Amino acid sequence: MIEIMIDLQGGGKAPLYDKIYKHIRNEIADGRILKGEKLPSTRLLARNLAVSRSTVELAYDQLLAEGYIEAEPCRGFFVCDVAELYRLGVRNPSGSEKEKPQPRECWKVDFSPYAVDTADFPYNAWRKINRNILLDDSEELLLAGDGQGEYELRSAIAGYLHQARGVNCKASDIIVGAGNEYLEILLSQLLPPHQSVLMENPGYPQAYRTFCNVGYRVMGVAAGSMGEEEARRHNPDLIYIMPSHQFPVGTVMPLGRRLELMKWASEAENRYLIEDDHDSEYRYRGKPIPSLQSNDRQGKVVYLGTFSKSIAPSLRISYMVLPPKLMEQYRSRCGFYSTTVPRMQQEILREFIQTGQFERHLNKMRGIYRGRHDFLLGELKKCSWVRHVSGEHAGLHLLVQADTALSEEEVCRLAAERGVRVSGISQYRFGDPVEKTQEERFPVLLLGYGKLGEQEIRQGVELIGEVIEGYCSHRTLHSLQSP
Image (cartoon, rainbow, N blue to C red):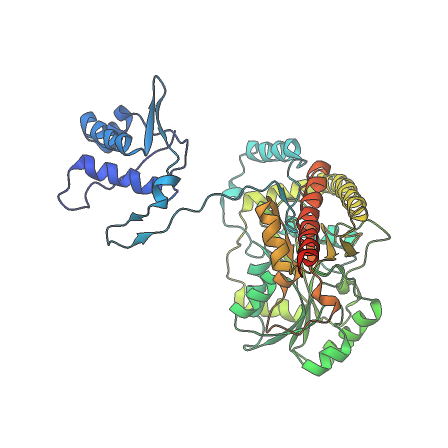
């Protein structure tokens, strides 16, 4: 049962029952009270609003008469499905059309490249750590804490990064923040204004939008082509790269190009490479690719990482490793900032890492994701419409080039009509449209498998195949019938 708070002071001299009726009606119309929700009893709502019960009964009677709610004997009042009412249009007090509430999206199969498995989250271990921390009754947890992030957590992150990614850092080099976007905004305050940044295109849209929002001039180079030649041609202040697993293309930057970019960055004082170590935890063939920062000897790499894919997106804990000069800038300019991550969350994560739970969870998820990766590859190999698959053996999605005359937009739209959510690679391009080569005219789809079971993967691939093969059959039939 929901709680309802209503301001009965406003609304002029209208009767109290009418104010209650209109408030609940508008809440239902705007989608803030959903179909099936139970309303408070007339006695309870009357007590909460300090009005007579008969006043609430009059309001409910009006809602019943107009079909907004229904009464179930011995159970109470429940909100009806009012979609049909709002196809006619409901007007707000100013007389303008009120936008119809959008229904929640419900997909048969969601191939989102951002989705992660939540069913296998270690709830018991996380709950136990949470309970134990609260049992300590530590008053320190209620204090603001270190704006850079708690030292013990930063020490745990430094140890993990050195062991797993070869990152050379100490706790004092790390800043903990609520998401990569926040850390990128923070970084912009440590650098001179009006910076230019070079990114691979297509690329990570959140980073592109964040750089635009802080006033950077963003330039693009073709994904997989970033190197010294492109750096010298565009001459940016910053280069943003995902060298271990580029999103969305999935390429790995060769060591030679990494060293070239390091050399380029070392030639000017305020040049830096921003390394976003996206999806680096999940690699299914060969050895893990060392981070770019592990080869940095000149203090030119800013390293970004997050626990969103390795633990859960809702955790909202990311980290940034700064070279010495930028850390000095942070302490002098931004050292007074409060942390953006609750201290309780930091303490739970520290314990999760230090007790080995994080490593066990990662190993388990690598096995689960590898199985889904291999199963999706196997299903795609059976499909005649698949021209090429790339980006495999790492991350949580594959790129699939489809053999069809349909555009990416048409494939995605027709798939959505069948209940399949899928995106095309053009959705991750930025800047002005570029002329496509003949090969690039074929749609390239991103198929994320992080949250999907084998049955969903098979169903999704089959439904996309129906879209593409159905179009081909229709086109062939039409050509045969033409004179």
